[in-house]
Amino acid sequence: MKRMIRGIADALALLLGLNPNRRALAVLLAVAGLVALNWFSSATMMLMSRQPLAEPAQLVVGLLGLPVVFLVFLGASRRMWMNLRRPMVNVVRATERPMPSAGLIVFLPTFNTFVPKLPEGLKAERWTAQDLIRALDAPAPDWPRILDHIQASNMQTPLEAVRYHLEAGKLRDVWVLATANMTDEKGVVVRAGSADLVKAFERVLCEGMGWRVAVHDWRQNAGLIVPPYNAQETFAVVDRIFREEAPRASLQADEIVGDITSGPVTLTAGMMLACALFGRRLQYTAADSDPTAGRPLEQPKPYAITVDETAVRRLVLQHMAEAPEPDADLRYEVTSAP
Image 1: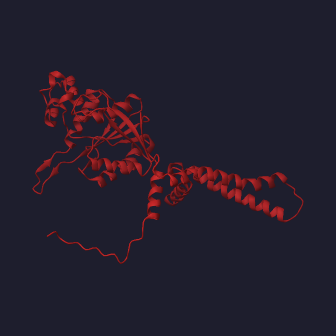
Image 2: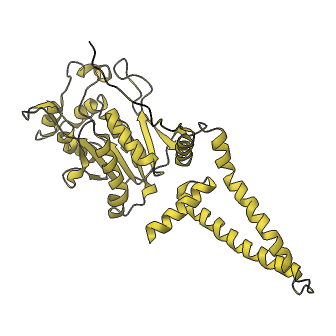
Image 3: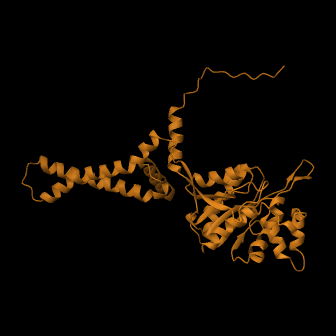
């Protein structure tokens, strides 16, 4: 029943050109329209009866209510017609300084050092993932040295995404999406994933930086490891975080933002779709220069990605309406090259 009501509300919002998250406004307009129509019908019957008017004010309200609601409807649906005439305007926007969030989803990359970013005294030390793990497992970790290497690696991006929302005083929960190892048919690892680095990343956040955040990872939830280059699995995991994990952390969906940086392109696509199609918040965190060519800013900037999902849906509907019908007589023949 709830699903049916929500579907009707979404359909009304879509009809009015509103964001589906504003379905309450669509329902309010629909109810106001029905009430105004009832009043208009009563006022019309009153006029047609040719009886003395006992309630002139009621007659005026009944006659004017429906046109007023209709004008409000036209105003609310104006965006829809504009989107149909200019379908590609402002579908996706990127703006600096995203709204601070209590929840953050990040991809954890494999560890890769950018030598030009290392301080002069450390340029001869290009660490691998195992070097980082050994440094953290030392009896007394050399945190200044470790953090220099972290800041000179691709792990800096998710770190700065966490920093941004934490310094705004909002961040409480971080979901870390790691990738599994890729193996061949014999089970030999041909490409290492980032799952083995999750504990290292958590220690950098909580011990090295001294940040107080709850880190959710595969050790508590095996579903947070995604196969590399699997957009569908990433889509499902991110969707589950918003639908199931967020309530467990006492968070609403609009209190969580997904950061699409640091993952392979296919994983980025999976997160982008899981957020954009449902009006969820997105961001990316980028430096101003290529880290392989020169030293970028110490703190890459987060940018909010705003996707007008209503416009996207209308584009899809418009495309379906304009697409030519398939030719039933058309035949395809596949031939091999000589």
